[in-house]
Image 1 (cartoon, helix red, strand yellow):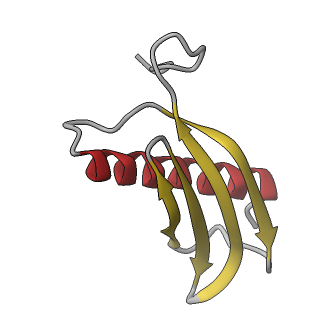
Image 2 (spheres, one colour):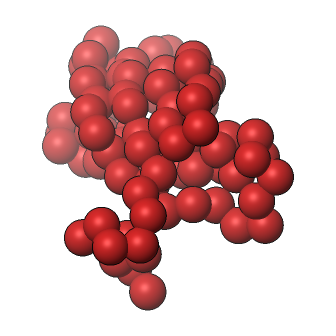
Length: 102
């Protein structure tokens, strides 16, 4: 089984990218903005097996100029294993996490 920390990391990462792409498209930007996680929560519904494909889907629930609320779903073998939600915020130059991966 996959532990809750790994599941949380997967959902956090997927939510962050969903928000970045949604903000980029809404603002007509050429590349996604640098986004950070303001808050997120995960509900573990059932054990998540490690020997099958995991499917993570997301949906934008609310979109503002610099932030997005995202709902997340993780499934394995057609069954919901975890759900989550988060608030992801675009940050500007000068923020400590601005383009931290460059």
